[in-house]
Amino acid sequence: MSSLSMDTFSSDALDQRALSMNQAWGLKQMVSSMTSITTPGTGVGTQAANLDQRHAPVRRCRTITVCGGKGGVGKTTVAVNLGMTLAMMGRETMLLDADMGLANVDVLLGLAPSRHLGHMLDGQCSLQDLLLPAPHGLTVIPAGSGTRRLAQMGNTEQAAVIRAFDELPQPPEFLLVDTAAGISDSVAMFAAAADDVVLVVCDEPASITDAYALAKVLRRDFGVKRFHMVANMVRNLGEAKALHQKLARVTDRFLDVMLDFMGWVPQDERLRQAIRRQCAVVDAAPGSRSAQAFKLLAGAADTWAEPDRPGLDRIAFFSGQAAPATGW
Image (cartoon, rainbow, N blue to C red; front, side):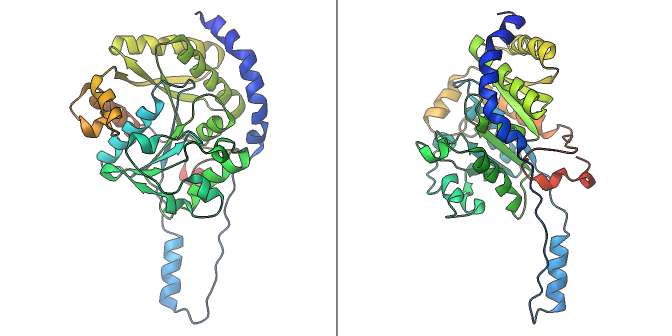
């Protein structure tokens, strides 16, 4: 498939799907106001401690959304193993399952959550109440599986999930977001709200076309200019780089975006075995080829330069980090 035919193939259908995203474009990030309440009888020492806490520096969190465009490319497997590897490296890491209605991060890790994001949106609990411990210090925020209420979330509720992270008392070092397949409003909003977008791509025409379509929506409607690509289920580095060049030729010509080659994950029977055992391959088989690949991916993410976040005009995770004083 030539680059020109790929753009023509995806454009009409993509433009129609993107019409409904005007609501998301109009949503602006909310800045919480700080209020000071003095309680009668409060001692000077307590007031000073509260003041110090309010002015304590806030840790910067790197937010990475993992997308696939097409289903079946292994984006959830990449998100789970990338998050687990960062946690094993000593980085405080959270993994948000943003595949609303068809969530399976908890399934891949053998977890059994009692509550999910739907309970938070209904006011039954806070985001912090949903934090689910996983192996090696990874924390999972679960969504629901087979939950129609979550599958039909509107832009307002999607924005509420993103804003809820501003209420965490201490941001993690990394927040990974595993999105649904496709280019729905939900996928685009969660991707645009992150610092970085990772596209998981397989060497299949449908995977390449759908990854391009998602990049087109994010570039045109949200101004995202940089993406990181992971070549998944390939045989070797040469095949991975050829896949990257195939997609980069199209994005360079028609979208004017930067598509970095983040790395690759090989076809590996040990990875399939780990999935069947409901655990991360970096935990179950740390010496396997796929586990070593995930370690390289995590090492790359851990050394990325600080994201450029000046003047964001969209909803963003940990939106307080976008203040000019931070240099983002």
